[in-house]
Length: 91
Image 1 (cartoon, rainbow, N blue to C red):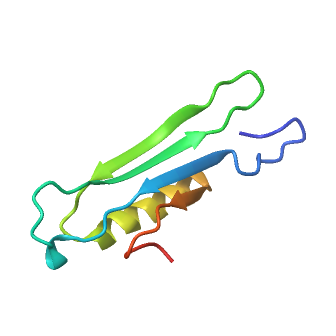
Image 2 (image 1 turned 90 degrees about the horizontal axis):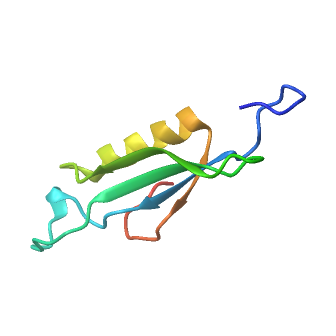
């Protein structure tokens, strides 16, 4: 989306990541484990309400797959993401 001057809005999209601590290669033996979830929202702009534009929720065999997908979504939407502090995270 562009403003009245034809410039793209800065920080129009924002993401939030609820990461997972371990993948199947470093299993802790837990059976009730969380999934990786990444949500991207478009911020309120003018009279348009905030809107969820993308959701990625999965527990892949390797956590690197989830992080790679999250980075691709950030690039596609040109957004910044808030990442939960865990032992494994995006740098």
